Length: 207
Image 1 (cartoon, rainbow, N blue to C red):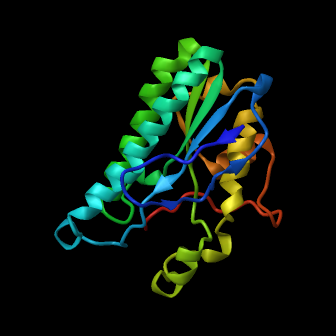
Image 2 (image 1 turned 120 degrees about the horizontal axis):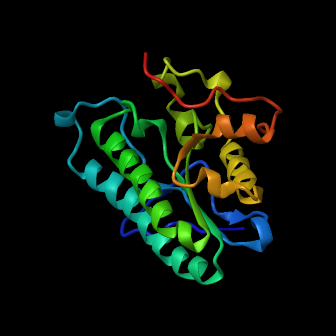
């Protein structure tokens, strides 16, 4: 499987699953991973959030995934096989951080659903994956400002990567196409764990 970083018109920060090489899917089919995400501000009302945050979420996040999927689909449809994974968030279905964040993630999951519908006849699967709290340099630096988050049950950056690898190796992955899955739920389904052998808590839910 080739993990391809989504192209964007603005500088972006890679999300939990970074670019790199992982095994190909069934029959050596290619796969594309879209992890691009712009760093966001925490818990701000719309009138407190700079208007540029909207552009960051939609330009860097959703547009990047669309551009990468467009390029990947051109190759995958010729091969009649492939997997596209969009790294999204449970913010697609419940409030998380701020308005623009949720709208961007909802758009990303809709991109997954509609792309899956159009590519199904070509044997290409499209899935959204929702990481939980991921231990990155950025979240570690913000830890003292986020006392409501349980860092003890957070996941490593490789956990979602293992979820993507499991999807790519699943000969029945088409049955998951068009849907969104928490990385933790995929771990339970496929039997993998995080680097330290733990099963992380999964998506963050607001109280």
